[in-house]
Length: 172
Image 1: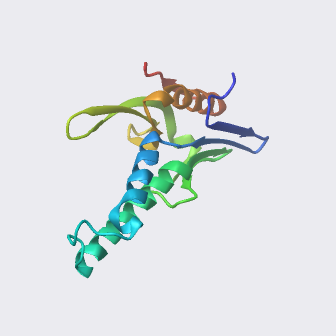
Image 2: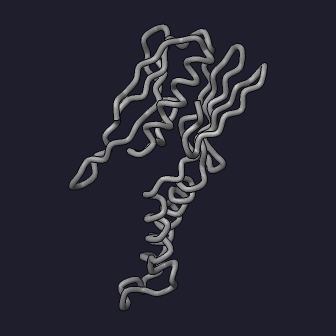
């Protein structure tokens, strides 16, 4: 089976790695917003931002938005399987959700629908979830947009085959 766009596979005898490039479309718009903001352009809105206090607050907000935009555009999630463990790392920009699990503690993998609520709408995304042998569910990767269902399912299926475990399929 051929990996979908933005999914890269490296399988060796001792280590199997799958990497998913995030490249979210929302990050492009957020980056455009940051670059066009008054602080990025060095101007204020007719004296509205004349106060250094207001400019400092907007500079901090711009920095946070820029970090999220760059992470969404440049980051990848890398899932590594060795003989005794499954690990997930997100980078190069640090991002929460890195984990290491003993391979024997994993019962199944599944692709789960996740809805992100905005002010006026809902947006469908997908999460790759791990079900442990004790029944706990842990999020492995959550960076899949609506158009990434095939990538999420490919990663789930490939990991399940490599680990010799089950999993459930979510329909897009």
